[in-house]
Length: 495
Image 1 (cartoon, rainbow, N blue to C red):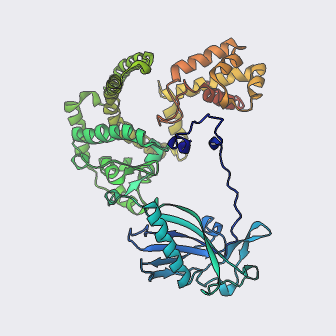
Image 2: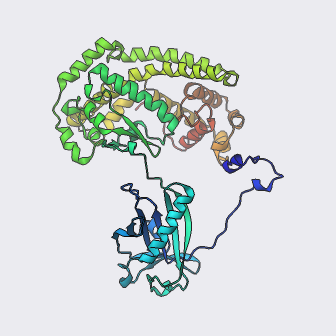
């Protein structure tokens, strides 16, 4: 599609044969040696070329069954470093099939490439780099004219005629701008709980700004956490969000020792856990932070935050309802920008209130409760803690799960409707109209389903704004209800 777009070819122009998709059928290279060439060193970012190779097809490297030989060459072709590995197995073409073969004992330790082949690969790498104008990651395969590998006589003689096939050449993806390098230890441990999804750069900019500016920096200034008022909190790396362990460590140092559970310590490397566990308690600073909150941001006090949040949420939902009624197609770019900024500014209050819950009200309190339950009631498996938390009044997630359970129970009791839904090959492909037709035979289920969408349609199975909300994807909700209907679990039942 991108090629057609760039070439100004209409996507649906059936008169042009160029709109079809070309299928390339190639003969498999009967490789004696395969490998990868990096035209710059991806480890130290130097201008040296790195060549990795092994016997047979490249599948042996890709699958991890062998560690390849590594040759590092300067641009003049001098080998500045090499590491010859023991290559016990290799994949070879036998009768048209990719076959795993044991390498002869005498050949396991042999280098897969000689200097002549290395210089040829170097030359080809430089040519490809100049052609594309950027450092290249090149996959290649070498095939000798007289293949003796079935007899397992592995060739390294430069005089033997051979062909090198370039299988793929692409930019080296592991290179990053030098400004991206730092001495910070970044962790996924906390991110796996708070920000578990793969993340687009757009959503990272939106939510990352809120967490950094208002939860971390502004919140730290209010609470007197001077060490972390200007430190970088987050990093987006290969679509995953990482947290700065130093910021987490400083924030958690305000917790009393008895609240530093193993769950919290697991955010950090093993070698740092004992040090953090024994970190001196600075309870006077913790108490001071609560006094500063009372002075600088009274709504952040533990007994006021909930009431303040409910008041804000009521007004914000009214604003969202007004937003939903607008036809964005009728707005100019300036009006769209103004509307976005209004919504964004209104949403800041959410982060200015939950920041206290994230740092002290919620995390610290939860950790203390967990430790007390373990210490006093032997709650090693966390069952008592889970029951306590799920039993709290007005837990939105618990309420939603009960509503899911109620829908599943109604569906389970209506065999006809259940059979109709189960007869659908893929519920996720159903349109809203089809769903309405399907569930219309049970007025009670239809009413409850529609009310569920009204109450929870703004939710999704991910925070990522790229994906539709349940109101836009009712098929997802019906799929969950169908799945739950296969069990007799009743979350609304009091134990």
